Image 1 (tube, rainbow, N blue to C red):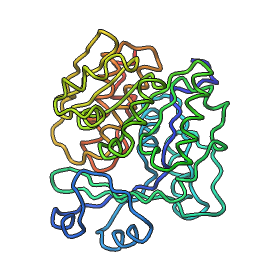
Image 2 (cartoon, rainbow, N blue to C red):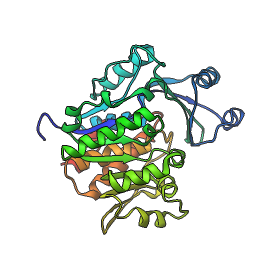
Image 3 (tube, one colour):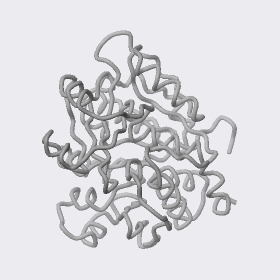
Length: 330
């Protein structure tokens, strides 16, 4: 790969993750649906934060987790997202750059504070997300550097970004610039509730503008409003060049034209926290794809990265993925 090229450029909601252990009773007491992502306002964020137990803070957001995974594999990654010039904004910038990911978007000097995602992990390892988007909703086309997009082999777009209108504009601008430069555009559907909010727009994007679709079983079934995974698989076939569909312990299925590859889940002793599983699967899959590896190998890299991240608390790998995936990357 030429020095000026980037494996993956990710665009998403720049958030600081606050992870904390919580009981099912805590979720019920606060009216939270286990395993879902809830969009909340600043007041609700303060109320939940004050009620949570001790937490760990780190730069987060779905696409940010993915590009950190790409960097952990030894790939070149860059992130586009907006934070404020406040304490959490400083946490985000420092933490992301420390992982090896390039991040050059200037901090906003006014507007809402830096966004944050309050992640409650229950004893069954399920994570419930409570997201205050903050200033990330003000990401606009002016924040999308055409040179950066042009150097990225794959542009990776976070489905959550489709909630704020200004960010939708940035989303479309970046996708147009990537295709104009002959690059690939990848989309993650992010969450079934996100799909419910934007189903028509997502289906139009997948069919017209997206080359690579990443989704889990619930998300792809929601997109096509079907109950069976096989029906969703048949529906997505031909709508984009590649669809990588994850199924938790059942592994993943990769569809590319008439080809279907079934990838086993990577072995793991114990599931501790499912936060970031889909994000890290995307990291391995996209890194492999950017390097021209066969689709089954891309899927195995994704499964391996997902297995690493669910073996501990937090959405970032603790063991360098380049070391774990050395045999597959050769």
